[in-house]
Image (cartoon, rainbow, N blue to C red; front, side, top):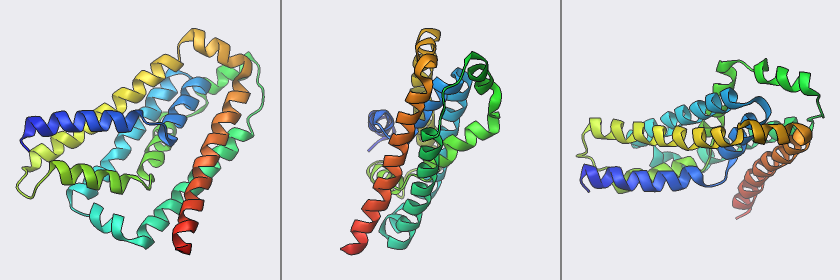
Length: 212
């Protein structure tokens, strides 16, 4: 596959993957609604940077080793499940707040902390090794130049950020947030429940695989 074909293929595949509902989407939605555009964009940037972890080990050929290692995948699942469950419980504990508290939420989280949340959420995704193994096997051969691998990887990160930045801009619009503020704690609880379900699903899937 030549570089132009690979570029177009990765654009289509990764946009579809980024748009599929998952923990990243829930996190960006939650941060955009609760803390506003700045928080959503910083979280989106952290998620995009988290892709660098998967791109690095995939380009080094380690994705196959990770995807075939039961121990590595189980460890990754447990770490991801624990993190998602913690986020879910935090959301479920959300309480109603007045305008002053809502305004303080906008400035309460540091830029580094918001980026770290996004980075960890993406980097711990246990489905990523299989996804990147499939994509890199399809697009890259031992003869592929390093600059092409870096360019494709950087483009995937840019696509990831672009999609979630769009989600942020839509959800952080004043009209949307004005409606959200009235029932914000309920939305936060629902999204927390979704995060908790993602974490529990990972634990249950790993338990099923061990029984087999």
